[in-house]
Image 1 (spheres, rainbow, N blue to C red):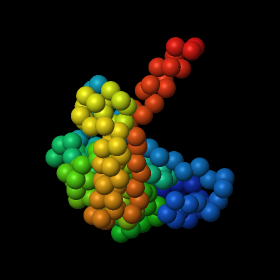
Image 2: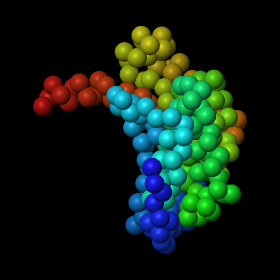
Image 3: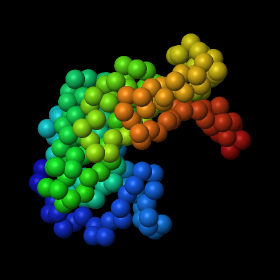
Length: 189
């Protein structure tokens, strides 16, 4: 894959601070190619291919790169670590047009996942974790074997744990939370 010229990065990028952008008209771009794109049949990528794509995403001006799910395999861990250490790092960001994106990793609400996520992305200037837990009744009952109060307690504990290992930028998702609502809406339509 060829590199795009650095001039393709939009000039005048507003400074991005933690959870804010000074320009109200600026649209922050988050790309999930390295995680979601790989889930398509036949679309598996090597660590080397992922780093090339990440470099090009930076040259395109992408603000947030979802680098992957480090606990899923040693290959994905190594790919995420390489992306965080190179593309998400000040020393290397200058070579890529001066832009250093936020590097996001995905982790379930478990210490093992969160530890792997931090080990993979801690070399980035601006690491972010996106942690999640199943919250639909069917998933809580059958997959997690927990009730709603237990799931909320796990979510709180693991978000606090993510902060304790070093993450300052944390997003949380309630996986499949609208399953019942979606079924009701389909029945109404």
